[in-house]
Amino acid sequence: MSERPYVIIVSEVTLDGKLTLYRGASSKELMSLMSKEVYKYLHSIRAQVDGIMVGCETVRTDDPSLTVRYVEGKSPIRIIPCSTANVPYNANIFSPDAPTIIVTTKRAPSERIEKIRALGAEVIFAGEDLVDFKILLPELYKRGIKRLMVEGGASINWEFVRLGFIDELRLIHLPVVIGGENVPTLVGGEGFKSLKRLLHFEIQKHFIIDNFLITEWKVKKGYSS
Ligand SMILES: NC(=O)c1ccc[n+]([C@@H]2O[C@H](COP(=O)([O-])OP(=O)(O)OC[C@H]3O[C@@H](n4cnc5c(N)ncnc54)[C@H](OP(=O)(O)O)[C@@H]3O)[C@@H](O)[C@H]2O)c1
Image 1: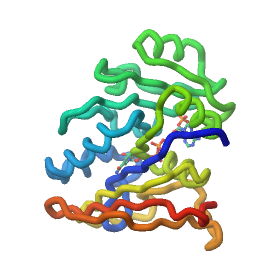
Image 2 (image 1 turned 45 degrees about the vertical axis):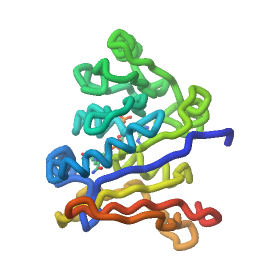
Image 3 (image 1 turned 30 degrees about the vertical axis):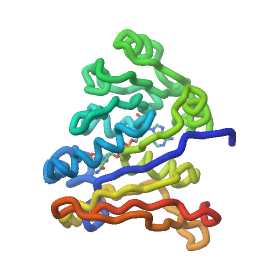
């Protein structure tokens, strides 16, 4: 593949690896456990990247702003993969605080595309069925997005992991356990199902902010799928 942005997946996960309270729940409720200092850590990463991505389902359930608010700094370009452009027109990602790109496919109805453009967001096409990250990532790189932060959810994280398009993983460990078989975990999708295909990581840093353990990992080269 041609050049792609440096990809950092960042996530808040419970001690049992969950992303939210139950399938379909907004993770904002869980994130309300985080202290201001932890938010500062999260937003300081946002301030250091050119682009920030969350999946369309996260936009629909969490309605995040994806801006830099707890520290000084410029908000990154918001990039939302959304195969049929089914994104609420009143979503916070359309706020004027930062540019927004909706990435969609041929399946998106033209009236949705027109509406989104009228809201001031850019629409780009990548893929036929779901958004194709093999097409999208080089395109983002060409547009000057050299560092991309991916903030979930589980399905989008899997796409990046599956394709090997990940350089770093930074986790905010929420000091709680939720349980539940069907509650989304850090990485969803089909899973690798084989020891040979696993993605390996090397720990770079670990530290504690209040009662929250932060771990920062780099992908170990030579092991990726
Ligand atoms: N704790 C955290 O840090 C954190 C962060 C983010 C989200 N979350 C939680 O995670 C949950 C959402 O996760 P999720 O896995 O359901 O959804 P997601 O990863 O946010 O978004 C998945 C959606 O993206 C679209 N998409 C477009 N191209 C895709 C592709 N190639 N592969 C996969 N998806 C593609 C699809 O929607 P279309 O069919 O509309 O295209 C798909 O349903 C929510 O409960 C949210 O609260 C937690």
